[in-house]
Length: 355
Image (cartoon, rainbow, N blue to C red; front, top):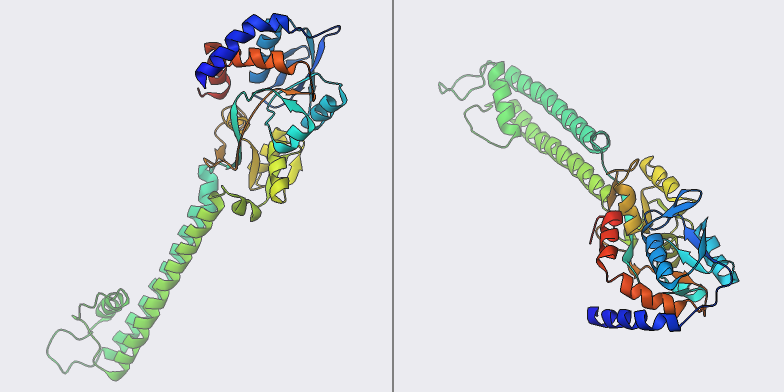
């Protein structure tokens, strides 16, 4: 594949002057506002990974152009109507978009994934440790109360019954509490035992009551642990169907959710979607994974997101063009050359933090 691209790139350098594109006016380039692939630095300056790639291509082909910041719906409609000549940004190549506009060769491997709110110490304590500790203390309190009650009761029944000279009799309150603790934990030392019928009846009741108390504690702890695991494990379409999901309108994430018939709350911008996620208004946000990673590496969302390692859908990004655009062939030839150069790999690392 690398040698094929190198050959194409070499031919492009020789042939693209022979493939001119008539240009009476500057090309109108639409930039989809989605860092780190395309964004406005200020009124007349634009940045982003795809913007830098386009500027290198345009310089090589001697294209003049102007930028216009827009959203995805306006970008696609503008390319269809001829208002835009080129579309840049975090534009994943999806079946729906391919039916609407044309694309260059794939540029950057991408994918649709899921982000949830990363658990802070405070949220973990409130959602996990606090109810677990409360459950422990409730059960321990009940156990202590019942242990005191059963130990006192069996001592009161057995206190005057000492016909056997052996020391196995329950002679005082301490002996009663010791017997109750040993019986409840099923240790069964047998060093202190009731001898009267009523004492033995109390022992039978206490044995089953102790089992019940320990079962209650185990059930509560298991329920809390399971709930925590379910809340933090959202990485499949089935998981999404059981939670409140958010997505940016007309994004690749929204398109995926529409195709899978998964209900979701639409947001105008990624910032609005992530703010809702951190405010617990939604349980997960579905979007382009490199975009999610970018936000997770920059304030105000730095390390506040947990991004699933499992992709819902693998796809690629590209530069969008109108159908049958004369720009397609010359842009493709130079693009293949540019993405094989070290400068492109350095840009990918600078924006995405990965080679």
